[in-house]
Length: 506
Image 1 (cartoon, rainbow, N blue to C red):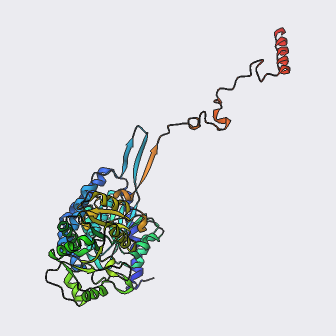
Image 2 (cartoon, helix red, strand yellow; image 1 turned 60 degrees about the vertical axis):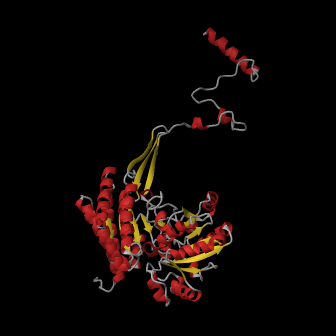
C-alpha cells in the first residue's frame, strides 16, 4: 500500500520503528567493546561538539528565538567540556568495581537503547549531554526532538554521528527522528526495543514517558524560590540571582522563579535589585504582565519563554525603563491563579516578603508545593544554623547556597555532578533525585562468591531454638547410650549380654 505524503503520523511512526532497528544493531556491536574503546567514542564525540559549540548555539537561537546565543555557547561548552571531564574516568562497562576481601565484583551492563526526548529551551546542549552520557554507558540513543527545535537538534546529531563514523564507530549509535510527531514519540517510547526513556520537557511529556510501560527517567518542572535571609551579603546575593535569571533569558528550569526575603531587610533588598537592573512593576503594570504570563489552559505562555524584558513588556502593553534586566511583581499569594508564584522560564520574578526566617521558610515550602517540588531552591545567608534548617526541611533535591541557582544546580557553579537532566525524586513524582549521568543508564551485575554454608548460618546456643539447630553433623552418628546410664533399658541389656555369650562359643 502506498502511503500518502500527507500521512505525516504514519511516516513518523515508521521512521521511529526503523531507527529503533538500526540503533539496536549498532548497540549490539558497541556493547562488545571494552572501556577504553567506549571512552574513545565519548572523547571523539565531545571534541567534535566542542568545535561546533558556537555554530550550534547560533542555530538554536535562530530557530527557536529563545534565550541568548552567547549563553547557549556557554551551555554547549558545559555539555561538551564539563560533562566530559566529569565522566571521562568513570568505569561503566566490564568490571567497574572489585572487592577481593569480600569476594564480590560488579559488572556494568548497558541498559541498551535510550529514547531521549529533547525540549526547545535547551536543544543543542541537552542533545550533546544525553548523547555523551548514553555513549559512556555503552548505549545507543534515538532522539525525539521538539518540533520547534528540530533543525538545530538534527544538526547536533549530525556532528556527533560524523565524529563516531570518522573514528570507526557505528554512526547509528546516535540517531534522530526527522519527522517529529506525538505519534512517533509515543511509538518510540513504547517500542519493545526501547530499554529506557530519558525525558526532559513539560509535565505532559514526562507523564507520557512514565505511562508508556517502558522504564523512564523523567524530570519535573522547576519553581525554585530564592530566599535572601537577613544575614546575607545582599549586594552579592542580588547579583547572583539576577545573573542566574538573565542567563539565557531564564530558560534553565533550575533558575530562580521568585525572591523571598524578610521585613527587616526589605528596603535594602529592593534598592539593591533596582540598582542592579531589576524593575519593580507598578500595581497596574504588574497586573498587565501577570495576565500574559500564562497561556490557554493555565500553562506557561510559550510566546514569552526565553524572551527578553522588552519583548515581554510589549506583549503586556507596558513601558519599562531602558536597561531593565528583570521584571518583578510584588506578591503575597501562592496558587495556580497567581502567575508570579509559578514557574516562569523568562526574566520575570515574583517578590515575597515575610516577617522572619521561619515564615519565609513556610512561604518557600508553599511555593514549592504548588509547583516544582523536588527540584531546586536557593538560600543566600551567612547563618549556618538557618542554612542547615533549610537543608533539613525543604522538599527539594538541590538546595543551592550562596550561588546562582541556574548554574549551580547543573553543576557548573558548584560541585554537583554536571548534568542537564535534574531529577526531582519521589516528591516530584520522578524516579530519581540525581543529577542524571551515565551510571543512571547502566544496570549492575554483581558477582558474589560463597562464604558460608547452611550449618554456619544456624544459630548456636540460642534460647528457644528448635532442637535440630543443635544437632550434630550427620557425618558423625550419635553414640549408643552407655550401659546403666539414665536412658538404659535392663531387658535390652540382658538381650545384648546373651548374644555376646553366644557369639563367643562360635
